[in-house]
Length: 155
Image (cartoon, rainbow, N blue to C red; front, side, top):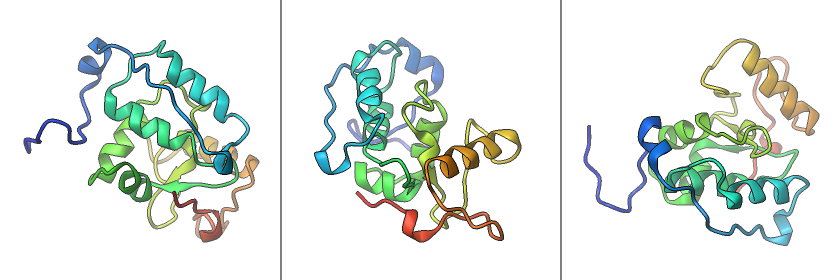
């Protein structure tokens, strides 16, 4: 495993994450990105009733700004928070204790493919992700299974 300097982005094992104090930082969403459900999402994270690592809090906070009807990619989200690892972002999303209110289903692969959901990349959970995205108005091409590029949100 590579060693990282303190303050860099790192995904911690779940056991370690449960021992950390809950994140209490107040979150803000600009009025431009204020979406239905964002207030509830931010309140959940601000409440801190479920322990999150600092990195998980950073990922989920940024995710709260992705509007309904749009998706972002693991890469765009990672770049936005200053993380060099798309996979680390994916692991933080996989451990999202507030799903679907904090909408981890709004993150897809850089290619536009659906990506993972609930710790899997196939099966009923992926069908659920597709259904959630379509319900929110995200266009997914039937032939390729990829989201329409116009649905990609850039921070």
